Length: 175
Image (cartoon, rainbow, N blue to C red; front, side):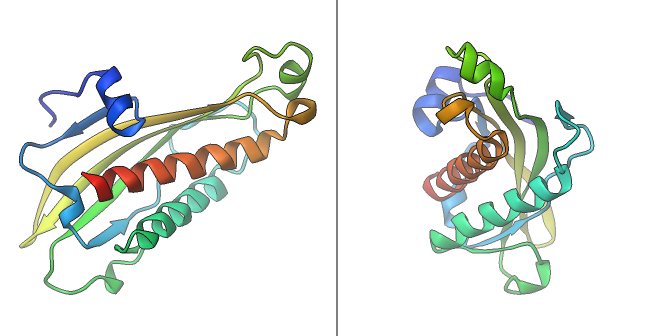
């Protein structure tokens, strides 16, 4: 269990995240193999019943694997694809909130009214010599509120997921 979290302002400066905790002495970037599990939607607060949360979770998992792989990591959603006997990271978490916002409010009022929000909490475990240990936790949220004629809410959600996947992969590969 984490003992201390980095202050919000330092976390934003370091990683663009809302809350960050990394265990002392752990260097996430030193791990080559990463297992990305599906992000739970069990307690997600969807503010629009038209959103397919399962599809958004699968999309986010693909985006995160793609970003990590693009930075030279062996990232996968299938443990069988990992190199046997080598230590690896497990990235998992919860999709806390997916709010498409209101296109009408964005168009007619603006100034942040009707904004969309995507919020994800995640944790990272290391697995080494069959020992599983929690080494990092963070939460990330992205808000979108500008678009032509109020913008496309579904695209805002996908863009938010893409931004968060990039932040998490940059954090793992740079820490």
